[in-house]
Length: 185
Ligand SMILES: C[S@@+](CC[C@H](N)C(=O)[O-])C[C@H]1O[C@@H](n2cnc3c(N)ncnc32)[C@H](O)[C@@H]1O
Image 1 (cartoon, helix red, strand yellow):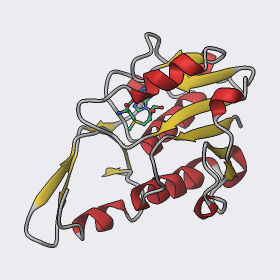
Image 2: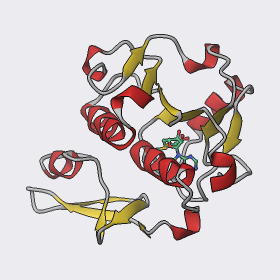
Image 3: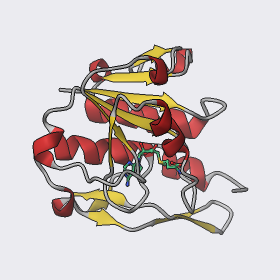
């Protein structure tokens, strides 16, 4: 199993980060997960929390997942990487391209995309894990967006693609409930 690295790039470890990062830990296992650029004690139970940024690590055989990369991650090549690096970044619409800034700082890593649509970080990890296990992107089932009904009679759209398993979108546990209880977006 490769090591999955989340380079935390938000100013704080917000509650949605905690929910996504916990979900990533459930997907890949605590022993295969590093959070870099953070010393948050809240993350230690989900993986290794490392204050150093991944940009100074110069890892061998590493792959950065970047929406803007020109080459798609394919199963045959995916089996060969030892490290997968992701931006710990909130999705934005349209994508602001902060991962590209990270890519420019780690030219020792190969950059690959997971198709043209933006995923949340936990979905990007889930899709990458499936590809490393031999499933090509075109065989993975997705839903294009999710609508969350709030407790205040409104609804909010999450305009990202989510993996569908057993007929249901795979969303970080607790995220829908958190958004449903939120008054403002
Ligand atoms: C919510 S996305 C952040 C995208 C973002 N708005 C940006 O500024 O780059 C979080 C992370 O998931 C990964 N990711 C999401 N969609 C991807 C895709 N289609 N291909 C490759 N990586 C993706 C990237 O590692 C990215 O840094």
